[in-house]
Amino acid sequence: MSNETKTPPPDPSDPNWRRLLLELRVTLDDQDAVLQDLLRKERHRDLGVREAKRLYRETRDKLRSLLAHAGGGDGGDGGDESGRDPAGSGGSPAH
Image 1 (tube, rainbow, N blue to C red):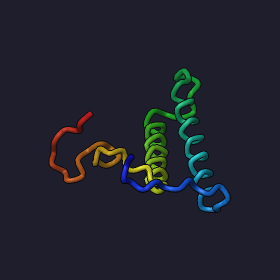
Image 2: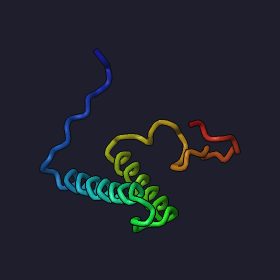
Image 3: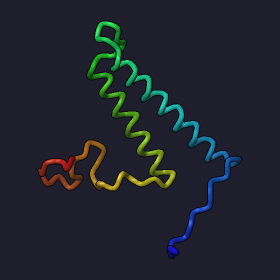
Image 4: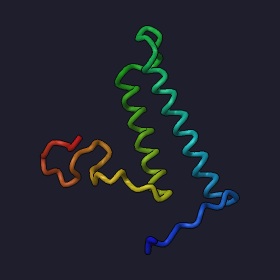
């Protein structure tokens, strides 16, 4: 048995929980739209590569923020969103 305290399950009737789920859903839908656009043939795309990358990073960061707010952590790598060392040591990112 673990000595860790178990977090009770979220209350679905809590407005904050519903808001979090709605934000997650909208962000996932936005990210899906960007990825669907990137998978189209070049001549059928609505977004350029730069804009798609920017929007993808924006939604990725939003998802990380929402999950961290919900108790999901930062991914455990200790780096910022770009994978760089936050201390700026100049070392290469660990991938």
